[in-house]
Length: 191
View (cartoon, rainbow, N blue to C red):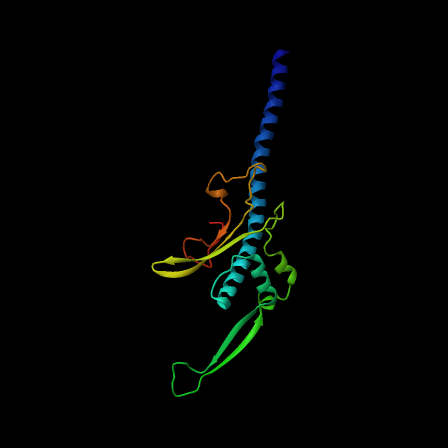
C-alpha cells in the first residue's frame, strides 16, 4: 500500500514539474514573440524619426535635438525640390533650374497630422515615454560633422521590475551615435 501511495505522489510530482518546465518554456517563447512585435513597431517609428531628421538636415544643414522644432518642421515645414533641365557641365546650352516646395507633412506622413503628433512617443510604453533625440557637431579628422542619435528610453525587459539591462541583448534600441558619423540607413537598430 505504501508503494502505491509513493508512486501516486511521485506521478503527481512528475506531472507538476513537467507542467512547470513546459510553462517556463512557453513563457520564454511568448515573451520573445511579444518583444519582437513591440521592437518592430518601435523600429518603424525610429526609422521615420531618422528620415525626418535627414529631411530637416537637408533644409537647415544640421540635425535638431528638440522635439518641438522637429514636430513643427514636420507639420508646417517644406522640402525644397530642385529640378535641373539640361546638363550643368555642358556650356553650350542654357541650364534651367526649377525649384518647387512640398510640405513635409504631405511628403512623409501623407497629410496625417495625428501620426506627426504621436511620433515622439514610444509604442507599447506603459508611461507614455518619448524617444530621446540628440544632435551635435563633432570634429572628425579635422572636419566638423553633424551627428544625431535616437534612443529608446523604455527598453523591453522580461522581468517587469527590471530597470537596467543585464547584457547586450537587453540594450535599448538606438539609431546613430553621438561620437561617430555612421548613417547606415539600412542598419537595424536591434543590432
